[in-house]
Length: 280
Image 1 (cartoon, rainbow, N blue to C red):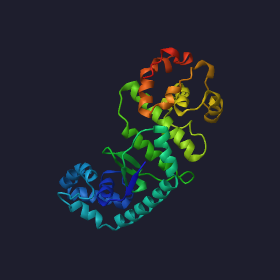
Image 2: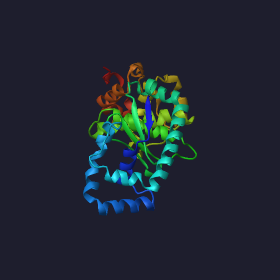
Image 3: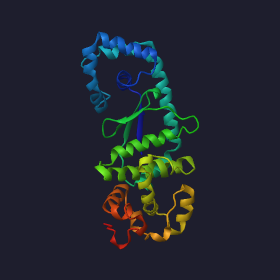
Image 4: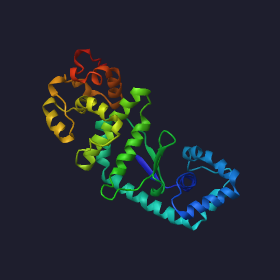
């Protein structure tokens, strides 16, 4: 997965103005600007999409507030820290480039666009999208496992890239993305099983999808037991018909497969999908 990590003044300032106040100084600055330039403050809220659309050529209609922040001493400190934070993320990304490429090629199996990742202050605690191939990241690195930032970034990218569903279908998609990024990719990245992490509300769906997920990964039936022991997710192997076609699918096709066959996979897990399953 290709990504370009940058620090942009307009993105950083916008996020500081409309995000969590990360210091007393920034809080007081925002309050001062609000009291003096309330209309201008409200107006630049809509700048975000325009900045991300063409950040290299963005020119604000009114740069009064941006200039005030740019000239603030505390902003200089925040930007320097953000630049340092960007370098740390880039080092981690480059170090684990092979694992990330493996996520795209062998786990997701889909083409991904090159992403522009706007780095903001890690104290803002934010990872979000505004546009298809743009991501804003500002989240503190974990001291014990700094590589988790890569899991968060790739999960957010994959979630944004895949189409949305409604109701139970969306939960199936979310569960499969957890299996792909937060579980399997994280396991390969960190060198230990991460299958017990994720949204607790999706744990039961994950349990039912897990046997088919192993088939999707190309795990042989003879290897099921060792994977169950690794991931601490147990199922009756003999209750499931092995479906070799699953390992030929990409992540989107697998999601569609699970949606089509959810009444066999989720509601009647013990009977397996057997011959009733529809593999297109």
